[in-house]
Length: 143
Image (cartoon, rainbow, N blue to C red):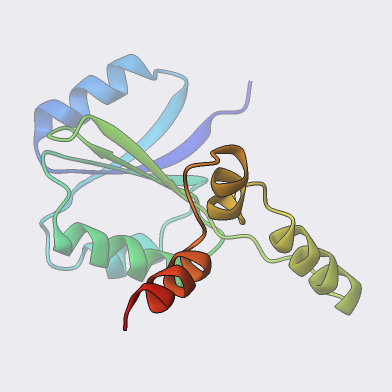
């Protein structure tokens, strides 16, 4: 069985210990996130992913995530914020681009279902006038 190598950056040792117990099938390379050379250390590690487990998702943590993505775009990042009770996943993917792919993506954007939501609402509800019609009616009423 191949084990995933995960860099675990933590804010408190109890978090690190708990995560390692919950996920015994991973090999964790642990380091306290507050160490000043964390980013430089991390870029030299051989790992499959980064798990950042912190009490609070601060601006410094977001900056660290952005810096990791800049230096190691191939490395997926999971950010666990215990105070917010959320997990955020950051990944980068580079794919070959052709003009037909770009054109297809633009066409898909224009057919996004909620794109013309205001028009759909005004058509389905007779007592709501579109904004331009309402403006015209108000201009007619003014002397």
